[in-house]
Length: 317
Image (cartoon, rainbow, N blue to C red; front, side, top):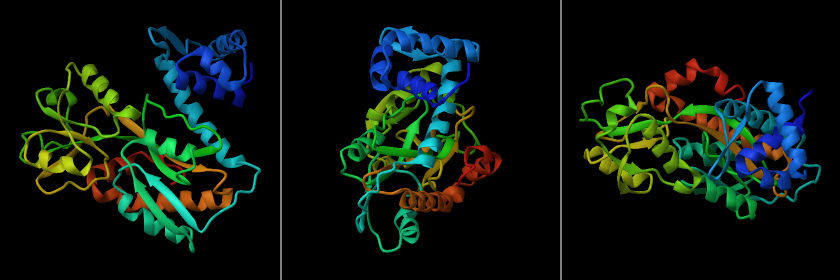
């Protein structure tokens, strides 16, 4: 059996919909044909890719590996061929971004890459809301953060391309915390802490936190809800801990540290509406966002060290 793009889109559709029936409708196959194709692919890779659950089907550990690699391939294929339609490009670029450390450089770097464009920026903690705004044409493009295992569906004419294939999520805690001097922190050692709930819970960030903590042997005690910046005084005051983007410079009174074993990882995608941006403009946007991200990689020296040690996660940046 030779794999082709159809097989990769099929397994991604199953993972995103959680149902063979819905995935079959999405890719234009009958359910028996989908089931047969899936079995052939499982034979090819040498193991089950999905198992049944109460809510539908879920990827196996092998399935997660195959799906992650399939998404990388598909994002590059979509970026390579693009859409043959010539979009009507306006002078204005409505750009969205998740709340990551590089937001301070996005307007200037994208402006340098796209001279003559007036850029507006919507910073939104929820990737799900940004994806919805893209789909409905309220944004032209966005920088999206996707927690591993909690995918966000991007439907045509929205295209995407991976900016950073994989990066770890860090934890912020008070500078006076007994663990603040450690270079990395075991998640299990935070079992008695109060947690600030991650923003954008509808894109899987809260579910991912719960899953990671349960895997470490405890249920997180979620005591606070605060937008991204509003949580910093709570952390500095020693009232709670929170997960953060690794590029953040530690705010006064806080420390930002990696979690041992990387229990939570994410990836960054550049997504754009093909009716608004052509391939050349999308490429320039990608380069601008890459430059903005690079500007802040070493704001946290611990992440800068990780970045230099893992060139495989950012071959295009």
